[in-house]
Image (cartoon, rainbow, N blue to C red; front, side, top):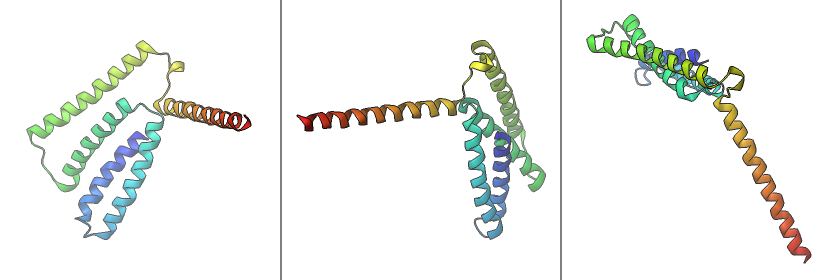
Length: 148
């Protein structure tokens, strides 16, 4: 899902460039549609993945993809600084993946890992239970006051 979101971001960049500031309606409408689809895929991806590494990977893939499309489709040239930036981005991606793998292997068995979405859902359910129980207690206290 993260790869689809990254590919969608690259497509969005192309659509926005082709839209030329809303002068080309077809590309402008495609940009709006692609932006909505990207948002959907990002939400799904981060529901089941760690935001810590996922967002970095998404941004890095988007950056490199847009650079590749700019060179292949629009004939842009990449200077030495752009090449260095791309190489640093690739090295950063590899380091993040390696670090995440080492962390997961060192600290948790796969069966014990919990994704961020599950943690948020559990916290929400606990809060709802607390709110319900405190609301019941308030109703009981009001009923007790009314009885006396």
